[in-house]
Image (cartoon, rainbow, N blue to C red; front, side):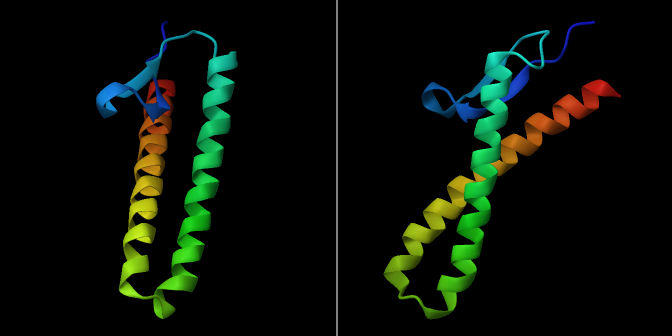
Length: 92
């Protein structure tokens, strides 16, 4: 039974989703995607921690940069969650 395409943790041209079609979960592109997802989630957690420490003491100009980075981290986390959810649903 063929697997559902895996949503990769990056966007293609124009912000479109990139997918991996393979029968090998342990292949090099899958492993690279796993590492990228792990890095993105770690960066997101670091940004959340930074925001919690910074927000009570920050000037309004600094908030834009933080909000942009948090938005990027949330977008990455949501893409990872969507990808993992698709793979879990496919296993059931």
